[in-house]
Length: 384
Image (cartoon, rainbow, N blue to C red; front, side, top):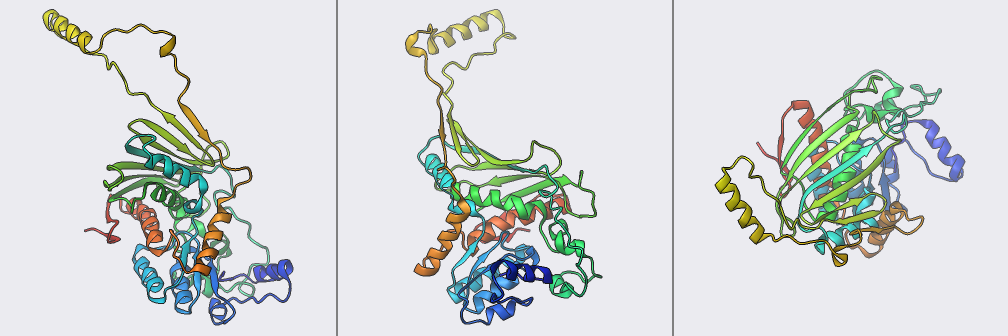
């Protein structure tokens, strides 16, 4: 369900799906219809929470585009609306329904890489469209655009069509690279590792290339402390989003463990790392007597062995490929529709959605304030 501020999009919808299609600039007219059971909220970020809450209060199930909220403070109200109205609510980060991410989860839970101690994630884009340089129709005007409807609770200003059609470039309406892309990485990683989120958030970055009037960075780097859980020890997460340079763009994860690593993108690569048998020694600065004693002790503990045919081993790298043509978007929507029919809640509900959105949008706050943010992922509150 889109809050269509531009009349041309309503016209295009009827051109594509037929003149019988009901369209409206006011989402409340859609919520009032008795023949609507569920809605998709695909609006600019600053409208997500309000429309989702209104939809659930109207008895509708909701598929909400990520990030679930623009501001952390709005998250609890969405959770309360889901619980009070007993609605199916799913956030649109499709990796939570992905067969590839489920396989990575299974491998890590089975101990394939030992204990996870570091996760690296990235999403790079090297194109104008990837950096949100969306087209602006030449007929955009106060007559064809519901400007006040677009602004909502955002600061009032005179009509500027670039702010509507490229809204991700502005903090008043969007959440920048963190809410658009970091949140996907948080969602996928939280699902794989069964974690509720970090306890400490620090981000830095800046506007390096796309100096087109936007007020959000095009390069962001985030560092996060994750606490130990019943399944995994404490670990650190490093995120990166780069709109400035690259080879056309890529995204992925590296889960680094005590016994190997897993690389996840559209497929999975598992590489086992053999434990070092002989760690070697550093004794050159010792006296001759101590050096000799240390060398003898080392040889007793790690006797010299000569290579032989039995010591030759094949590479311990395995690859797991997704089925040809696989699309996790389809599975994510299937899970939503199935939940509507069965009334069984999805994994990526409002609570999961806030725990993924919060560290993303708080990364923006960390950058703005130039300091780390302490976060309680269990109570979903900012500390201090």
